[in-house]
Image (cartoon, rainbow, N blue to C red; front, side):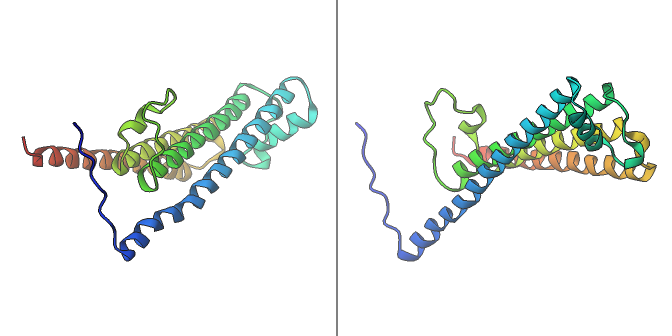
Length: 200
């Protein structure tokens, strides 16, 4: 037989402070709008790529200008490297969109209010055990993925960059990687500490 527990009545100040979490709602709604912008941008770029493949001159020129690092190094035709750069740009949009989804759903669930998706068939697997630490690790891994895409695009256009720029971009990527490892390691230590402190 379950015993219902009456929630403790909060003081007016505590109620105000706790209610202030809803101030984040406009921020998450804004991120949803940003997601819409990314979806629109994705389809625009994809339509330009398809148009260029089918011989549309305006689409081809737009594409060649978009992938050119400098006007002097603008490609003259739609070759494999150009298509790869465009596709990597599309993948970059998708990965940033995934990052937005994690921030919107995970952040709202963690910091604002429960979404009540416990038995929903489409509930993301990671959402069942999400907390601030898990969210930070997943965001760090997503940022590494985005950084990897940018680094790959740089290496495809390696002739357009100086040695210093290549070293700088690689170093920044390594900083992201080390930061993610440090976050994951700290999260592991905290998890072990919490488990050890629990009474057996």
